[in-house]
Length: 121
Image 1: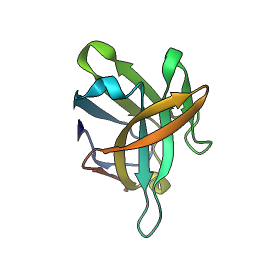
Image 2: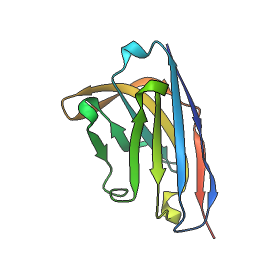
Image 3: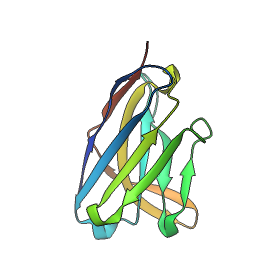
Image 4: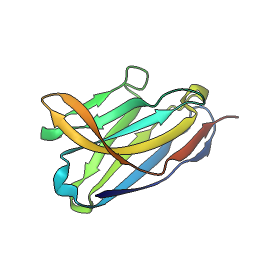
């Protein structure tokens, strides 16, 4: 089992920034990639950004140029730096542990508890 603990959500004004953190522990040898998803009210979770093997990253088109995913391998922690936030970024953000195959990210059933991000004036 892999345990994921998230932190860093909250309320921010449009144009502001937040940084989310996700610390992994447990059987982390099962995973070689991590990602952030978000879920809008009444919608399915969608991939926001993935940090895959070889240091490569994938981003949803809606966040390219504004969000940055990074990893501290020594701390088994992945971050999501979110800049120029918009009201439409308001969602619950989830950390996921998975595997990468080439440039593709495949989510495993390891999820964080979710953290609310609200962008509003």
